[in-house]
Image: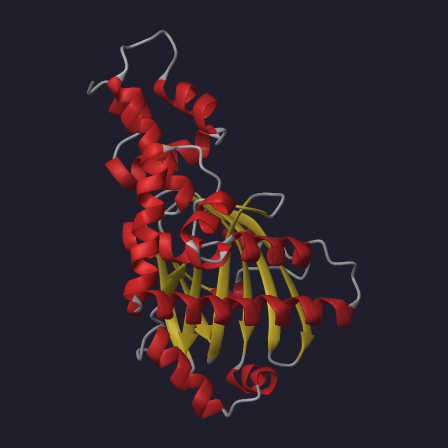
Length: 291
């Protein structure tokens, strides 16, 4: 089944009834300024389909959320997607799936106006830090700062000016994070401090991010971004891995592995399973059976 994105939603924001066999969901769009848009979408796709969409040139910042409350998925990085020229894209889903996200779109013209740079300079920044290819995304760790800015955005008071300010703040914070991450990737001294933080977590699984940052001499944001650079995991995911190792080294008990880990780490069982799948490729109960 092939559908056009422009035909998917009714004026109410719900998926059109003619596509009800294949999917359900809804969409909400806020466009406080020309060239600036916030789109919140949720999909439950029942049958294989391909959604074709016209994508305008600009920058897309996508936050994965948990339906229906727009709560962020803590283990999921955000996606930064530069599109250098208008394009037609196909989004193919081959099996039953659920998606929920909030996405900010800003044209190159709008982005240039808030950064004080020319359009060419803004595009050059993204070709250096993301990709020279149109439509190639970059994953960026969801830091505490970005999470707080996102929560301020969705708790907006309905005033258009306030919404514009919150969108601007979130976009500029994302750009700053990209710059910090790029610096870390090229800085041996920062990387040395990050490896030191990794060793501290090995010794103290419950070390807080604030304590880690203070001990190794990095800002909170630099630590969060850099830790993912050197390990491929967020600090929370790495702490869960340490918990996995220790739990698997203990004798079996009547309590499931996921329950033990949830009690030990304070993470939800959903986050535990995501971390387990990402690191080991199996669910926690399957990992437990390998002891």
